[in-house]
Amino acid sequence: MPARAPPDHDPLDAVLRPPFDETPDEKAYRLAQEEEARRISAAIDESIRQEKLRRKKTKIVRLLLLGQSESGKSTTLRQFQRLYTPSAFRAERHLWRAIIQLNLVRSVHTILDALTDIRRDDLAPGLSYADTIHRPASPYSTPPFGSPRPLPRIPGPAGSTDSEPSSPRDRTAFAPARQKRASDPPSSDEVQPAYTSEPENDDDDPDAQTALPPHLSALRARLDALRKVESLLIARLVPPSEGEAVELGPHPHISEHAGAHGNGNGNGAYANGFGYVNGNGADAPPRRTEIFVRAGTAWKGRVQRLRAAPLSPTSDGGDDAELDSDPSAIAQQTIHTCSGALRALWADETVRRVLRRRKIRLEEWPGLQVSYLNDLERVTAPKYMPSDDDVLKARLKTVGVSEHRFEMEAGTESGTEWRIIDVGGSRSQVPTWVPFFDDAIIFLAPICAFDQTLAEDKSVNRLEDSVLLWKAVCSNKLLANVDLVLFLNKCDILSKKLASGVRLAKYVRSFGNRTNDSETAEKYFRSKFSAIHREYSPIPRKFYGFCTSVTDSTTTGGILASVRDMVVREHLRGARLL
Ligand SMILES: Nc1nc2c(ncn2[C@@H]2O[C@H](COP(=O)(O)OP(=O)(O)OP(=O)(O)O)[C@@H](O)[C@H]2O)c(=O)[nH]1
Ligand SMILES: [Mg+2]
Image (tube, rainbow, N blue to C red; front, top):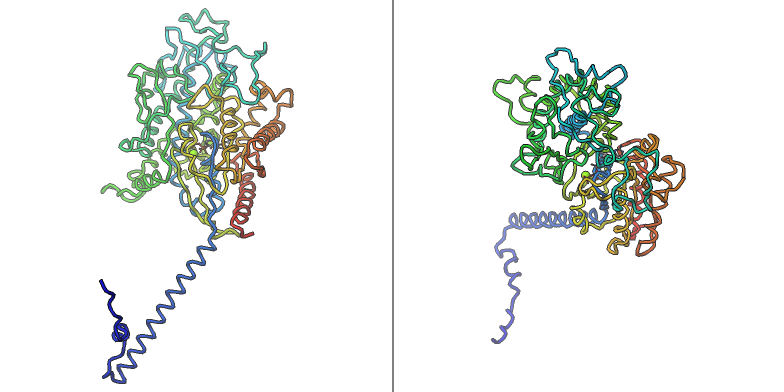
C-alpha cells in the first residue's frame, strides 16, 4: 500500500488551539486550568522521583535460619522480634498463652506417664512398700497401680539416653567412643524384668517394680482434668478440618510400653484423646505426636478469632463472658484449680527420683518446657498472661517455610526491612531449604544433643546430624558468597548436663581426656565446626561463631546485635554502599 502523504497541518495543534471566538474571561479560565494541570503533573513526577529514591535507600536484609529440628530457629526469630519490634512482639503475647498451657499440660502428662514404671528404690525416704499398698480411703484414690502380670522394663527415653548407643550411626562424626566401662549402668537389654506378681518376694530388691504411693495416685486423679484441657487446646489450635495434627511419628521420648498397661485408674484418655493419633487399634500402645503448625501466622489468626467470638446472649461481659468466648480462659481456670496438685507433683521427691532414674530431662523433650513447671505459682494464676521470657520459651514445632518481614522500630537500622526466613528443621523438610540462599545464614547446632537421637530417625545421633548439615551448608556452591553465622546453641543445657556427670568423651571419643566442663566442650566444638567451615567452603570466607543459649534474653541480645551489625555491614559492602 502506498504511503499516505503527511497532513499539511498538525492535527494536535488543531485540537488544542484555543477557539477563535474565545472571550477574555474564557481565556483566563483556560489558562488557569492549564496551569493547574501543569502543577498536578509536576507533583506526580516529584512523588514518583521520591518513591524511586526511597526504594533505592530502603535496605532489605534477608536472613535465613537453618538447623535441625529443635535447634532453636523459631526461638531466635522471636528474639529478633522481641529486640527490634518490641511493640508488635508485646501485642501478640496473649496469643501465646494457649501454647504455653499446652506445653505445661503435656509436661505434666509426660511426668504422669513416667510414673507408670516405679521401682522400690524410687520411693522417697520414709515411704515404704507398705505405703504403696495400704492406701487411705480418699475420694481421689485409685486402684493399686501394679499389674499381676510381669511388666517389661521400660527403657529410658530414646532422645535423652545416657546408655551406650546401639549402632555406629548413633555415634558422632567426631570419632565416637564404644567401650563399655565397668562403672557404666547396665543397658536396658542386660537387665531382666524385675517385677514379679509376688512383690513380697522382692522385699530386698530395690529395683523391683512397685505400686504408685497413694498420695501420687491421688494427685494423678486430681490432674486428670488436664487431659480435657489438652484436648481443648489442640482442638483450638489445630482445627480437625485442616488436618494439621498429622502424626510425625511416635512421641520420641515416650516408651512404646509407657501407656500400654493403662494409666492405673482405668481411664482410657491416653489412647484416644483428641490430638493423639493412634493408628494401631484400640489395644496398641498409644502414640503421641508433637503439635505443630504450618509456617506462617494462621494459628495466631485462629486464636484471635476465637477470642473475639461473639459472647453468648446470657453473658454479662464480666469474667464469665471471657470464659464463654475464650477457650484459653477455660483452660486457665482448670489449670488454676489444679495448681496445688501440680505444685505437689513437681515438688515430690519420688517423682524426681523416677525422672532421674529414667533419665528424663524435660527441657530436652520436644513440646515441653520445664521453666513453666519451675514457676507454677505464676503460670497457674487465674489471670496469667505470658511474659516476654515465657513467649521465648514456648515450643511450637514449625512445618514449612515462612518469611517474617519487619522494620526495626528504633535505632540506627530503623527503616531497614528485615526478612527472616524460618524453616521447619525435621529431615523431611530439609529439601525445602534449597531455594533460600540469602544475604546471611544463621546455622544453629544444639551442642547439648551429643547424647540424643533424632525424633524422626532414632538411628541418627543429633550431633552427627548437625555436623553433616553444617558440612553440606559450608560446601554448597550456591552459598559460597553467603555469610555463615554459627550458633552453637543450648549451651545452658550442655553446662547442666556435663555438671550432672554425663561424660562427653563417652559419646565423642575425640574429646579425649579433656576436662568435662562446658567451657572446654564449647571451645572444642567451636574449633571442630570452624575447621569444617575452613575446609569445606568453596572460597575462603570469615567464620562467625557464637556459643549461645537463645532462650536467655540477656546474653542473646548482645549476640544478635553483633550479627545484625555484621550482616548489615556485609550487605552494604555487597551493594557497594560501603
Ligand atoms: N534451655 C534452652 N532451650 C532452648 C534453647 N534454644 C531453644 N530452646 C528450646 O528448644 C525448643 C525448640 O526450639 P525451637 O526454636 O522451636 O526449635 P526449631 O529449630 O524452630 O525447631 P523446628 O520448628 O522443629 O524446626 C523450644 O522449647 C525452645 O524453648 C536454648 O538455648 N536453651
Ligand atoms: Mg521452628
